[in-house]
Figure 1 (cartoon, chains in turn green, orange):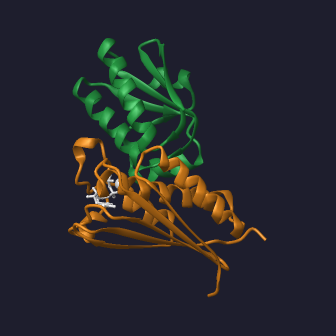
Figure 2 (cartoon, each protein chain N blue to C red):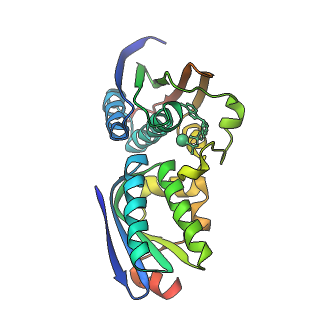
Length: 111
Length: 143
Ligand SMILES: Nc1ncnc2c1ncn2[C@@H]1O[C@H](COP(=O)(O)OP(=O)(O)O)[C@@H](O)[C@H]1O
Ligand SMILES: [Mg+2]
């Protein structure tokens, strides 16, 4: 389980690995806020390739980060969303604030 | 309907146990030969209920969470219980987007997800005494 970061042009890619429940959401929030305190990014792309489970705690964490980003006119996106995560995105309306892209290249063009 | 099997586990309200609880219930439910999608639904609902005991029931103090699961021919019944704070207004709590802890990055979608991923959800709660969430799902066995 964990989270790693990679800058891609002006986008911060957040690579998630594990099950995005309350336990992991807290760790991601901490690490991401810490990273953003050191270096500002207006565009954040979450890579869900290694996440096969998410619940409403993941939703809360993403919305919380989105609210921060909104204040500085930033944007969020997601790539590589699997079946279970997609259902959670749909039910909670997350796609409205976090659009899903085919890959990093499409994201960097459209974000 | 006859009971085929039943199990009960108690564990501490630690966030590491959210994953543990999901895996235990899914492994037990496997006896009904569910599809992968049905298993994912069960895991999601259990995760929501257990997380609520930890964050809202015990408010991050240490308490006991009990899960009971009952298998019938084509149905699983799951109880998730805590002896924590309890819920004053259950109807309000069940509404989508309602959360009593917005400062903790809660989305208020837990009960909505449990309702969507399971067939039926019952909530029993007494303020100061605790909460039981009972969830039911029909398993359309692969055989
Ligand atoms: N086990 C519980 N004990 C006490 N309160 C609870 C419990 N489960 C849910 N609640 C209450 O119901 C509300 C809604 O729960 P939920 O839909 O899971 O949203 P969230 O967890 O994001 O707040 C919670 O904010 C809390 O006030
Ligand atoms: Mg919840």
